[in-house]
Image 1 (cartoon, rainbow, N blue to C red):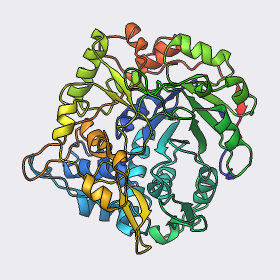
Image 2 (cartoon, rainbow, N blue to C red):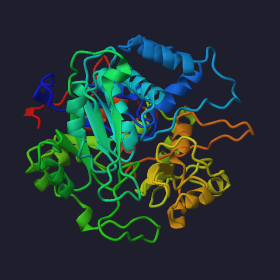
Image 3 (tube, rainbow, N blue to C red):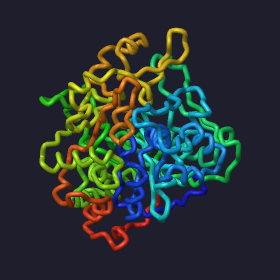
Image 4 (spheres, helix red, strand yellow):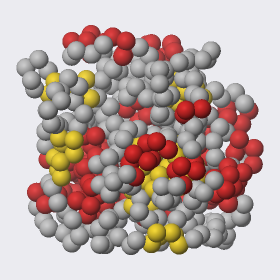
Length: 495
């Protein structure tokens, strides 16, 4: 841990989950942080969301205000010059593309990623003393170093990561806090056992300046089993500062069942006793942990505390609140369907190009509709979930199971990997109002995700705020400033 980080920290009882592309945006994280709990922004594809906000003209000025605080003004000015359109692009005009992720260094891509993560965390932390985290996916390895560094420049308090085994993140945070150049290993399909592929990031070279050391954020690994928690905790280089222990009913991606994948009558993965984490064994590791997936009620919080957890992570209740980043109309449609009992959230084993099961909320007019999915032209023009592979000439190429099947097969992919795949990058961007508009008039349909346990809705107002969720979970009314009184906490030493 960096010397700049305090070894003691009052732990939140509630961690607001990092959701989707921009569902957990800065407004939601800020609202939760103001209650004294941990607000979390989604760090996924922030390069896309910043660029498209700027191309829409940044009508409220928040992005430009945040970028005005970036420590190297020249970088912020270059980002604005590339993407800001005064008054916004025409309603039918396509968005300008951003550089796609890759293994080789790319200055403009790194600058956009650093600036985007800085802006989101800066806005989430602005105007209060609460704590803010950022959530990433381990599967998107090529984006991680620049994204994390941008969040750290804005003073992010926690980094959370799931969808993989994040063994290198504790070391990465230590190095970036000191502005040291880093190399993060990247999984490359077809690489030999002795081959080594990395994505590099050099903070001084990118910034053109040397800055004082940064506070080192605390790291929470999102895991689904006590076995994986024990594996990560076994050595100082891989040990996180805590865990989020997530069950299979949580929204978004979930871990596949252990052993051979079996599907039930509804076509969803079947989970068994081996897939339930042992909270006693997790507690014995001596690191704080939070329970997630079906714990988003006062009873769930009480059960988590009784099991030795520091609290819970809750996502779906926040995804449906007023500060959610979801497109306003889509949020209300989701909320209405959930309240009248007509909403089906399916744990689709094939939807995500990552190969992880992914919760898809069945809402008409979205990519949950098999007919709409079948009619959508297959393409991969954003590429956050594409993966590198070794080409026949030994160079590195990139492929995604959601791209056109013939192209994927020419790249050495297997046809069975393409079955049922949705383009999460485009679909999730459309869910927050940033769907691509194409010259032929095509508009990207949205894709919505949510958790499978919606019991919290019975006890919340028809249209509610983030502070209402916190007050409901803690069993305390919001105070006059919209902040829920903090639950009594112990002063806990983090790992």
